[in-house]
Picture 1 (cartoon, rainbow, N blue to C red):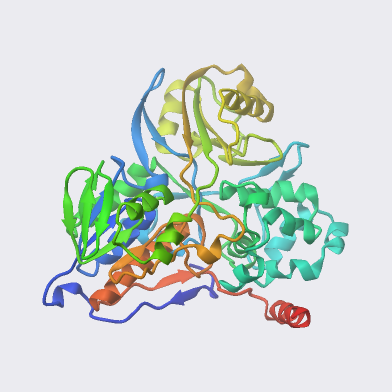
Picture 2: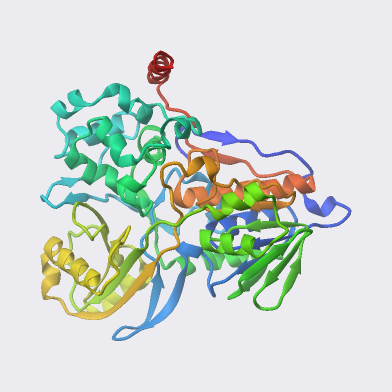
Length: 506
């Protein structure tokens, strides 16, 4: 929290603690991912009794970790792939500080270079932190962007990138796809592949399938809206060990009850949460913090929950194309100068390569014992799920890291998942929000609308705090403040110019 222009959004006032109420309220949180764990934390810390229902045997959702037996390797730590904990993820970091005030479970990645099919390379190392100098420096030192490209940019069309205001940016750009927007502003094609595609594929989408408003908001969060820097941190161990097991112990110490390996099937108004285990959990409030498919299934199975418009909004939520994580254990190390994380552009189907022993303790232990390496290959927005895909990923790895061509694969795991939310053009206006038409019912998750400049894991955490706050307000108890990057572009001059342009067009 070094950015002096970060914004603190105050919480609803009320009683300091639910234990002072005549009857102590009880809440059920469905979903044990980031959003659900955040909501459970927000409620339990205010004295609410909390039950967490999670269908998997582990916590963390899409950032969960578990142990697995891998042929040729033995017991191995597993998860669904690399996740970057950026410094401007204020609300997620606030959650993690509950178990480690110094955040020692996170370690910095000094750089995450990007390369393309022509061998061009971008780097985030050494960039100034202050906007807009960070974005300008990145562009001008990039091999895909030249001064003549800057002169050719359509400044008027590009104004939304520098003048993002949430939620207004969605009124302006959500009907446009990211690919068309970049073409409209004359952004160089090579730079589109190497820079902006990385953002779009963070949403597991090809640029033509991503809302331009989401792209602009991402640009604001990571470049022009924050001075926290463009480097990020990573967990120093598997996610269960580093993050969620300690948080579970913290919450259990506050009386939270966990029901793992259990799926919620329906919610009766009033509230009763029905589970596939046969349990029926009564509550005074409910947070649904599942993935899109889970949320749609619960609402479909709860015929009396909410009104028709809200139920239609939930049913209209979509999922992004699937993604593949291919984790391989090699019998020899990759070159010592290989980065922990390497992003790629124009090298389909490969989107990034992670060398896990550079940062993850269990992978480092295995690599040290065997003189090998643990490498992870990601492919986002997968359209071809045939057996050819892993072979294509390996071929790309061999081309990028030639030393791996002679390595033998000791063990491997393939994870194909399709449960990330969709952020297509036009989705924002009909996306359900944290608030619902049912008093005492709230939604949370990275697919849920919240009119703040947050994305990905930080959107999950922020909606989790907001969902807890909604229930706490319902109980008459004070909520929790949340913090974001500025909700508008940092340059008043650019904002005035953009507003003048809009007035001339209207």
